Image 1: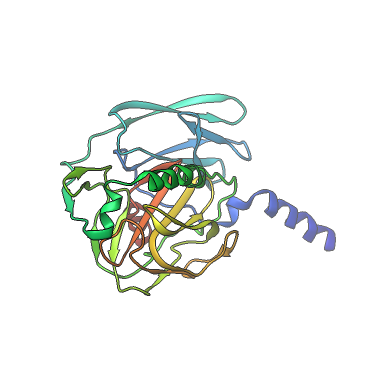
Image 2: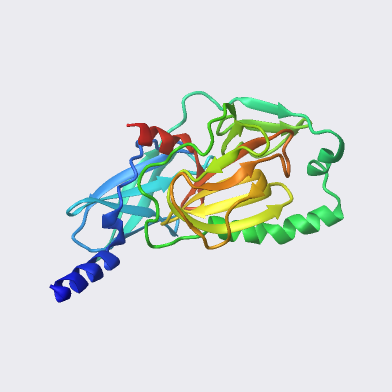
Length: 280
């Protein structure tokens, strides 16, 4: 009996993805969306790549597998290909389609000390340069195991004040599109982890203010910025619903709110895609 238990434990350790629910995401092959490709393989752990970047691969049932591909907001339209590696290499094609309508604009006015985020001085520029590789490396994290439980919940209950993909202007100066969702809230409001994961970054940065990055496995990373307080430590394993921090207005923020972002294969995607899947 003991031998059978040890054998079963070894199998479960080698196949961690089978213990967790699959992430259900609607096929939305749009800039900022997720392309979903189904395939079959009798390999125990097939891999997939898009532009040489590893992708999120999940087993559905038996020999049925699925790849999730985050599509950059700036990706050109047209036919794209991913490479799947199991016992050999093969390619699957998908089309990036135009989004319906164009993203709206948002004009933000920064005053007083906040103007430094428009025209940083030399000391600020040095800080920005030193922080850039830290944030980039966190976004590039790829853990081979799936860490989430397959369903995401909202990190806070506040109203949405800025949607994903907005064309943003600070004091009339055009900046990159909004790469997440902003939720309003009072300073000190608790922020919950939307899914199981591991804390891979806790810090205070020039633009982001106090921030937390959570690794949910296989290149799926969630980001929380402008916090007032951190309530977790680097390397900590967390469960869905655990408190990780509180809402604030640190960094480039005009008022207390949470900016929540999701990265998939190093690409920002619309967090609502994971919430919509969870509601089904």
